[in-house]
Image 1 (tube, helix red, strand yellow):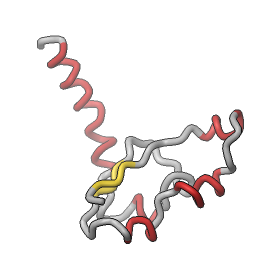
Image 2: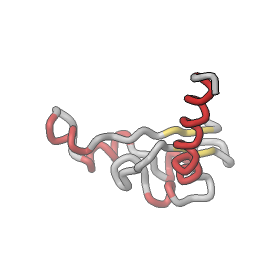
Image 3: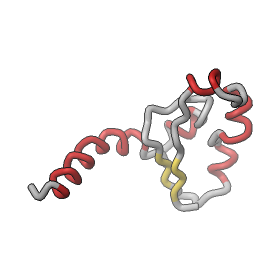
Image 4: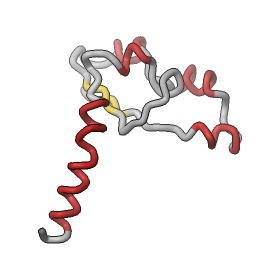
Length: 90
C-alpha cells in the first residue's frame, strides 16, 4: 500500500451495539507497526481525526514520520471551505 487511511470509530457505539471491546477491536482491526511494515516504505498514513490511540491506531504509528494525520486534520476545514465556495460559485 502507498496510502493507509484509517477511520474513527465512535467509542460510545461500542457500548450500545454488539461490538467487541476496544482491546478486541484493536487486535482485529487496529493499525500497528506490524501492519505498516507490510506497506510501502514511504507509505502515507492518514486519518480524519480525532484518533483513538490504542483502539484504531498505535501511538508509534500515529506519531511516525509516515503519518500525515495532523496535516490532514489541520487542512480539513480550509479544504471544505474552499470546496463549498467553488460549489456555490464564489
